[in-house]
Length: 357
Image (cartoon, rainbow, N blue to C red):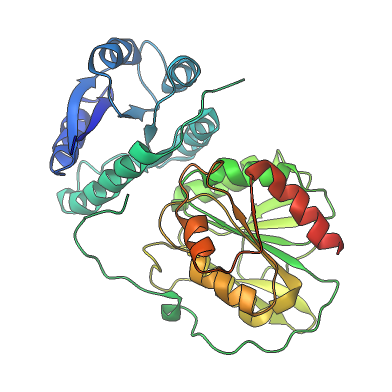
C-alpha cells in the first residue's frame, strides 16, 4: 500500500523539522519535501506531486491565503492549515476553510516537549483524513493511533427514558459538525430566515476559534449568532455556538429553554460533543427539536441523533457527495435514524419546511 505523500510549507525551520518527525513516525505517511515559502512550495508541488499539503498561514513573499486561493483554483488538493492559537490566527484559518482547506491544527508548542505526543496524534489523524477528503476547485480512514481513554455521552449526561413532550410552537434546531463543518454550517445559516427557531450548534473546534467563528457567522447570517453562555435563554432568531472547551446542553427552565455549559470529560474525543448536545435535546425537548448532522470525521452525534429520532424529533443528514468527510452523517445513516439525507444546498430549505409544519 502506497504511503500518503506530504509536503510541509512553513517559514519556521523548527516547525518544519518537528512536523516532519511527527508525520514520518506514522507507518503510512511520508514527508516527501519541505518548503519555506509558497513560491518554493509551488515548484515542489510540481516536482513531488504530494497527496496532502500542510500550510502555515503567515509566511514571507506570499501569504498563505493568497497561495491557497491560487492552489485551489488551479490545482485543488487536500490542505491542512497550521495556525497559531490567536484571534488573528483563528480569523485567517476560518478564511482558509472558506477557500477550501480541509482542516487545521494549531502550531506545535515548541517549548513544551511533553505535549508533542498529543500534537503528533492530532496532526497524523488529520493528514490521514485529508488524504481521503473530497476537495473541490475554488470558484470564486480510521486511525491506528495509540489508544486513549474514550467516553460516551454517559460521562456527561446519563441516558434515561425521555419525558413525553407535547408538540409546541417553541421548536429548537440542533446542528452538529466536525471536519468541513465551519463551511457547511455557514451554508445552512445563510439559508435560514431571521425568524428561525433558536438554533444550537456543536462544531468540533479549539477554544480560541469558537468566538471568532461565532462572530464570523453573525456577520453572514440573518439570525443573531453568538458563543453560548451558561444559563442563556434560547430564543427565536438566535444561534448559540458551543465554546471550544465546553459541552453545550439544552435544558428546560420553567416555560423556557436555556443553554447549559458543561466541563465534563471529552466524549468521542471531543469537547464539545454532538452526542452530548443531541442527548440533552432528546431528553428535554423531544418532538419539538429538529436534528441536523453535517460533514465530519468519526461517529460523534450518531448515537445522539438516534436518541433524538426515538424521542420523535425529525432528523436530517448531509449526503456523502457534498460532505468533505462522510463520517458522522454516514454513521447516523447506518444506525437507521435519519429521516432525510440531503445535499448541503438543500438542508436549509428542508429546515424551513420542518419549522412551518
